[in-house]
Image 1 (cartoon, rainbow, N blue to C red):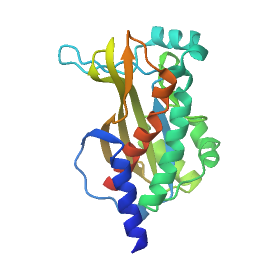
Image 2: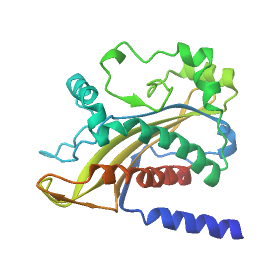
Image 3: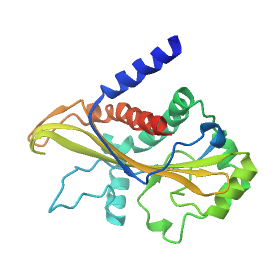
Image 4: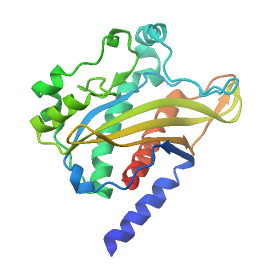
Length: 247
């Protein structure tokens, strides 16, 4: 009984960290959790900056801006906290995925090194246009957001996994009030999720969106970028908690 009450309290506290959550994706039945345990993380990917989330003419913004933006990010990498922390966000998300799935779903994971150092994983292709890709990944992972069914099946066989998971983030900052010149700013994150069974078949796909509850003052287009960066782990936890509860 104590364990159930603890979980409810955990979910309540996590829910208090955000004030807007939206979901989209294919309708699918609940997964038998132990049928996909242990899971292999195929990749945790995302963008390398925190662009403003501004909808123009009804079109939602994209988190990546192509090769030029990638070059700009590289040039100013050490001078911009929002960019310098980009790998930290993804590494945190990988750790949080393992922790939250273990706590809520009791799902185990194949060890990271066992996956990324496997002969099969190393042979999996990121695609012909990977050299122009602006997407980054958590440490040591390849950009395998759309893995082939055959490759996934062979990877699962080689590392003893019963399934695979792919996580892709789009990190933004958004005005909570006012404008990007004068107002308040908060985190805004989209997360695309895919789960595959051990045959490489996709069995669940869903996208989650969270706008963080914490805000910072913006004055004359200036705000505390370091403080903003510190807000993202809580939002990542909320996204992954909802993902786990949906299984």
